[in-house]
Length: 176
Image 1 (cartoon, rainbow, N blue to C red):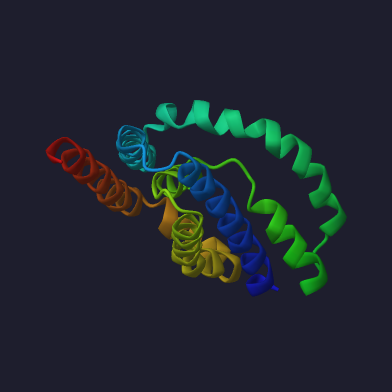
Image 2 (image 1 turned 180 degrees about the horizontal axis):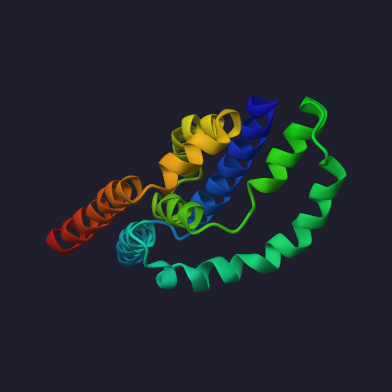
């Protein structure tokens, strides 16, 4: 059941990455636009790092923007509840993949900047697979995992790593 739910969630991410990459691809080889998208992706990573460090204000407006889509999708999730098996878990995962989330949005920005539908889909697949171990653990060991994930040291280490990646992206942008 947990695998089916997560398969659905990751499939939604891949579709969103494909669409974002397609949008980036439609921009063609417009180098200034690609540089702008790369800069935006780096800034989103910095915002995500700060979010993990306990400063959510930068991603909150972006998450609110996704609420319009989620308000249309969320009622469909009720048809899948309660989850009794794969027949409910898979479609629930497909729907929950569209839940507004700053972390997903920052990964989608990178997919958009990739300039390719295929690369965008692969980036979101990698993002989804990267979240899989934690979310599977969360589903299986919710109480223990929640304490670990919410531990200040875990959030701080995660935040510093993501923030650093965004800063490296900014530095690369300004260098080249």
